[in-house]
Image 1 (cartoon, rainbow, N blue to C red):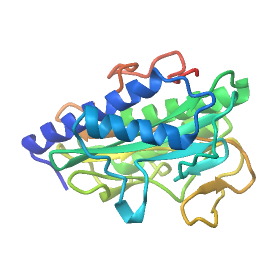
Image 2 (image 1 turned 90 degrees about the vertical axis):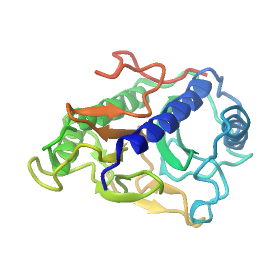
Image 3 (image 1 turned 90 degrees about the horizontal axis):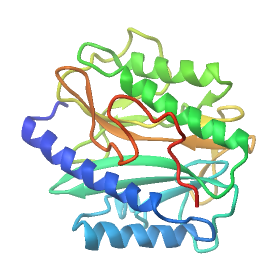
Image 4 (image 1 turned 120 degrees about the horizontal axis):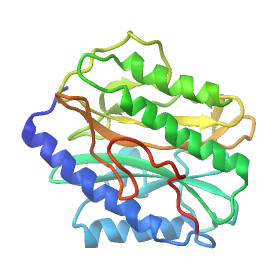
Length: 265
């Protein structure tokens, strides 16, 4: 479950490359683009510019390099030519990348054009909640500490936390142990040890936490049609705390930016 220094270095390299993918998205005007166009742009960048592999493509039979989850889609949205991003949308892009046999996983929710204050607040709070979870990571802490920090922040701001999906260990495989829940009680769960690598990826709903899967077998939406947002980083437990392996250009390692980390297209 723990990674050796050489493995951590390779995971950090995959994370650095994946962060540059989000740098490309940050520079892209999303209004009027289809989610399939975004998928194809990212695939070209990962394969041709970064000389890496989009790890999601072919995983579990999935045919694309990213998930594109718009508005009330919680996760696993499928890119489509007919799914055109409009002014006022929010969209989460969940992307994985493998380099030299090791995989990094990250996601970010973007504001498309002019987004109303309620949607903007949900996105901002979800970003903060992810960082609350990250700040709880250190040797000797427990997985329950992460979930508790996330859920407490969500509830204080009037949002619900999706419980059906969670973070996960990652390395040579996309999904490894342990499972990282985004709710829980402090002082409970697996004890964190130096060298553990996993994702923290809370999904917050503006309404109730209940979700359902659509007929395509992939797309998960809120049952009540409310907006949902998600952020994700791959992190490693270090001797002194935590290292965010997928830290993006617009972020600092110590705390989230005070401004909203989102692209305005």
